[in-house]
Length: 157
Image (cartoon, rainbow, N blue to C red; front, side, top):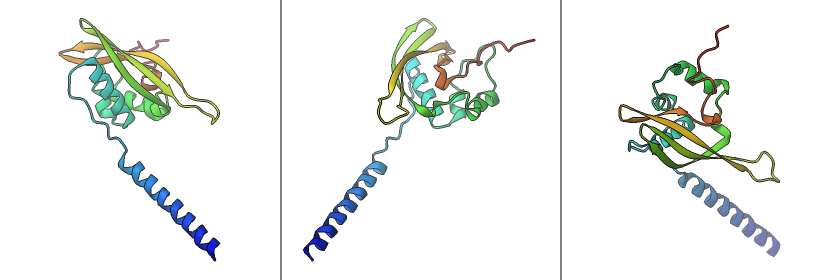
């Protein structure tokens, strides 16, 4: 009889811990918000956030208006086809270096491990931006957020 009460107490305790864990999980999820400042850092951060949220209309507004810019349909299709795949990587947006109308933003790409026995790894790269009419626009991002053929002259046989 005592063992049944003890087992019942343990099961109730486990159930309470599960409910607390679920409550914390759903209430502590960070809702990221777009930055309003006009800086290379903000433009890069907002682009990454828009792509992560699958808000392709907003993400497209951060692309520079230069020759061979992809159309919106080409841009969006790159994500749907898997040519651009930000799903398996996290990004830490670092500091920006501004040189006139050009800027570079340091990025740390955080890749998770594919097996339980090894840790993930980090890769550093840079975003390149240009100032167009007072707004910072991207002309390059690392692979997981950028297709290789954007801003490239189309192949002509």
